[in-house]
Length: 274
Image (cartoon, rainbow, N blue to C red; front, side, top):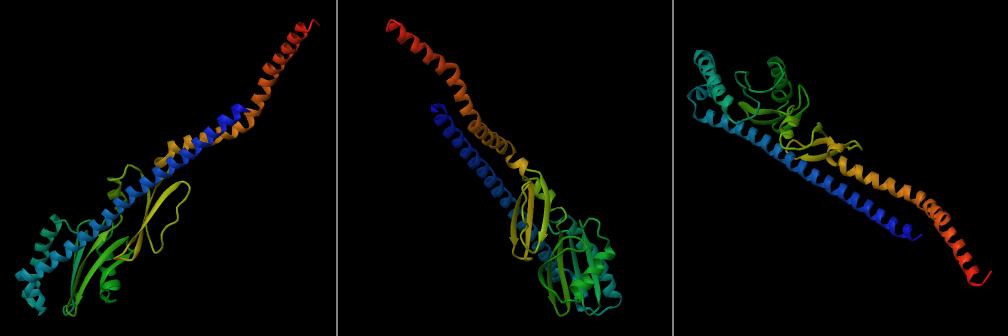
């Protein structure tokens, strides 16, 4: 009984400390993930802002852009448009900007598109999306699109023109993975925060500008696998102790206490002259 009184509280304490350790590890992982996710969102927004600035500054300083801006058509317009496209492409390719950009001139109904890293989206598909979802819908500002692939957009508009940039979110997991010690199993963009599972630790952060949730999931095993395993061993040890310690006590009683009592009685009998 004394053994049970001493061992059982120690095991219970070990379980409590193990659970606390697991929660601490998970909280640390969650904090690290949130930090990396915030950095990713800020970097993506900054790249789109740089795209806006690049287009805006060229429209105000480039002579070909100024000829285009008059939207008078004809030979001079076409020559200036081709030169402007190439000049902007050269700058766009090397600058720290978003994956794609576009410039639409309303009076000429002319659309220019620059693509730096939009993966497997064909130019025809991108053109059609910009016509249908941006030009014809009069949308402006920040927004998110799932088709033709996950994209973050920033669109600027005036009565005569429309321009902006798009950032591919397909490589979000790869970019964030570089800063995390845990293997990312899934990255999603949803209207509501994602629900986690027992197998995964999921962190959701609201991305204010496009109005969506960024959800990142990592393997629970990688985050707290070893500590969780130790905690489970402790739990099983306590359960085993609850069953085995009484049996151990009975075994000791039978093998040690009963013979000692018999010897005691024999000793008393000898002393009494029996």
